[in-house]
Length: 72
Image (cartoon, rainbow, N blue to C red; front, side, top):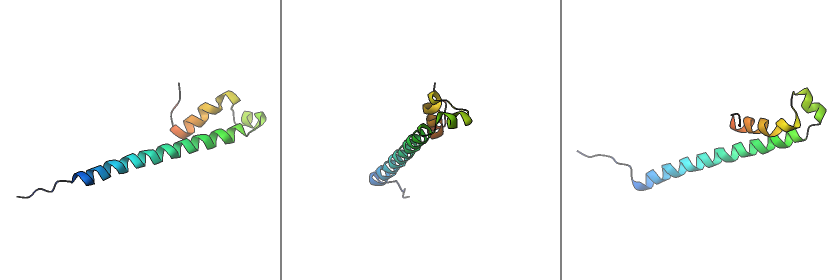
């Protein structure tokens, strides 16, 4: 009876693809964070107030937008 086992090369390729996918996701989230931060910082205090935000909230809001969790 023969068994098909994955080769070390194919397993390394799969692990490498997982790493690349995680890296790509991390870069995407970082880009979203910096873009959100830049856009919110570009608003006037009045515009932020209309959105219910203050300048001290900008970093937290950008982090939540990119990473989807509240920062303590």
